[in-house]
Amino acid sequence: MKYSLGVLLLFFSASIFAQQTVVDQFQKINTVQDAEKYITAHPELKPAILRLSAGKDSTLIDKRLLRQKKGDVFSVGYVTYKVLESSETVRYRASYIFLDGGSLSPSEIETLKKTIVQKLNEGANFEQLSDQYTMDGNKTKGDTDWFFGELMFPKEFQDAVAAHKKGDVFFVDVSEKDWHYIIKKTYDDELKKDIVVLRSNGR
Image (cartoon, rainbow, N blue to C red; front, side, top):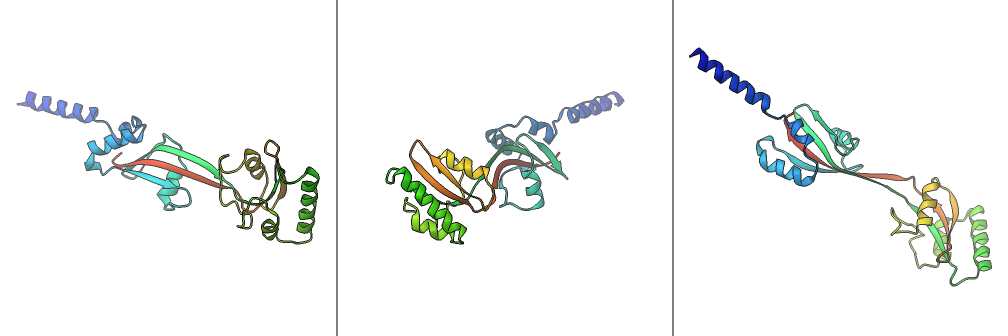
């Protein structure tokens, strides 16, 4: 009887030792597909996939998660998290006046630039000047709205906006297309971060 009880205790201890913790299992999960398999296999732990965005999700745990990097695993109390995906983009916003070198001569472009800058120095409103002078039909006071990526504006445009600070007025020429811009940066840059997280009870 004593021998049988000892064998049972040894078997029970070995089973507990061999059982993987949630953290151990999370270390092996690298994709959303892996996470979905884990969710199906462990409903008793109430696992879930969370999709969070900086500025939108603002609870304390959301903010902590948004500070983590892809692959990070950590536990808070009896709940464990793993960041499966993480992406960051910087968005910019400005107002502009577009001058078309295909319709105007170089001297006409330079004259317009000087006229517009002089009016700005005299206190004219940039947005009103944009509606008056821009040649691309934009009647939203030249506002770009929030943008990122070269598909939205020429690379020269985006690089120049990124290099300046809020309130700066500057020129950008896209020589290849003979496009000319007078730009005012109207907002500080905005970092946009999105993450996908696996959450599960257990440690």
